[in-house]
Amino acid sequence: MMKIFFYLTLLIFALGATVSCSTGENSSKTTLENAEQAFQNRRYNKAQQLADSIINSGETEKMSSNALCRLALLFMRLAETTGEEEANAALAVRTLQAAMACDSDSTVEFLRSVADDDRSRVQLMQAISNAFHGTTIEGDTVYFEYDSIY
Image (cartoon, rainbow, N blue to C red; front, side, top):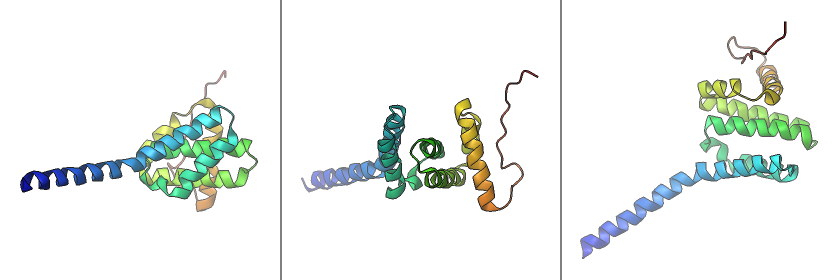
């Protein structure tokens, strides 16, 4: 009977540890998805609050580079709509830098695959980031091949 109680207690602790370890990414992912959805629904203040809550909670450390890139793009979109251009652009650049630190290859791949509407935002984030660092590192810029009629 004591063995069963011991194994049952061990199982409960193992399940608790599994759940506690997995909730960080899921909660930030859900919050990011809610923020993106709010922005699409033109609820800019709600999107701003959700995006800020991700930053303020420190969840960015647990996020994937893909999610960080999406958050950076959301901040750039919010910069154009909420009147907080400088603050949101700064948060976008810091989030993009965190994505590069997390996984630079995935970040570059994400940035190369953005929609045409977001390319100017990506280039602006890179320009600000390069100015912040004071130098342009060769290979640090993502180049886009635009369709041309020429």
